[in-house]
Length: 377
Image (cartoon, rainbow, N blue to C red):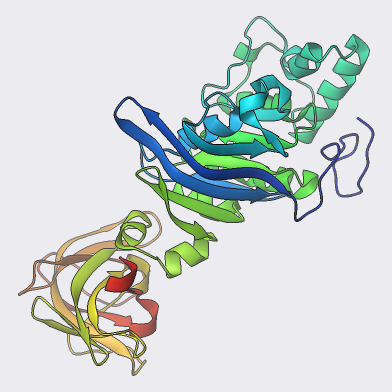
């Protein structure tokens, strides 16, 4: 594996025959897949481009793993087409697609050394033993596992095993790397560390990656685009910031973060909902709508105090629960006269009495609270 790019770690080449940046590596066109009476994927359309890091995100049962298995060629669509690097998966075996895959179970061989595990895909491709060894060592260097080549799998930590599985998936320079929730079983600190490693590898190797996860932070942190799925369909596609700041539907808004969703009717820049009259952006069209209030966009003040911004809503409430959560103070505030209680997160330095039973005001800047109108629901 001779080096071909100065941006790649020493001794490790970028993916062979790297396509042009605009080339479509994966194309799913009107794909439907059913299992008995259950439609797992429903008229699904998606394109993934060369060098992109794309994440399939969604709740359990939304179809994201089925989509990944369709791309792998492990499943065939009932209708529609799936093409990988220009090849229809219906006309070739999964091993012919040249895909690197890291499963949640990792599927490492306990009777083999680390180097032999990494070199296994090369062995299947009948690469000579000396070259297999050299390329396995280079792949281990890539994932920062120098010095464990001759160890056994049981001698490694959970994070090291994840890196071995990743090295094995990259050792033959795949045209596409598929990740099926490989980090989900790790503790938070280790998971976040490996997420940053994935981001580094993607940047250095410029390999196309499709990740399946239910971890919103992971999806936002390392993806170029996020595909949020619901019921076998795409609910919204975009960058993490686009999905979070401008949710297209009530489902998208409710799935991302921990918002309070207030349904009401908009007239002349004002939403009326359950005895509340709340200002919304002036361009919001009239009619049924949903206001999205996220904890980090809200402010707690003492009753009677207002935010400096002239475009802020203020609603009085009462503290129901409050506690330090490791990064600040999390409070639950009931809004009397309404069925709502709202979560607020604020720094420790704020001089507001947040003991249960205290009266407070909840404020937010109008432009920082998305509004989903009926026409996009």
